[in-house]
Image (cartoon, rainbow, N blue to C red; front, top):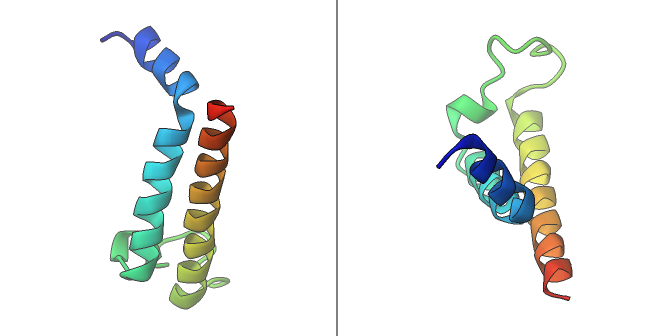
Length: 77
């Protein structure tokens, strides 16, 4: 597969990728994964702690899942 084929697939089926990323981010926020929720070394680590980062990533995961389902439903019509 070349780059053009992959890009054509992703442009046609973007909701699959956003669903996968949303599920990973949502599970990471629920299970408190270090690589996702640890604020150490982040540019604004003094502003957001671990708990607020978990809430932000949880909401981001839910948003990505909802948008991907919405895109899939619109594609079916």
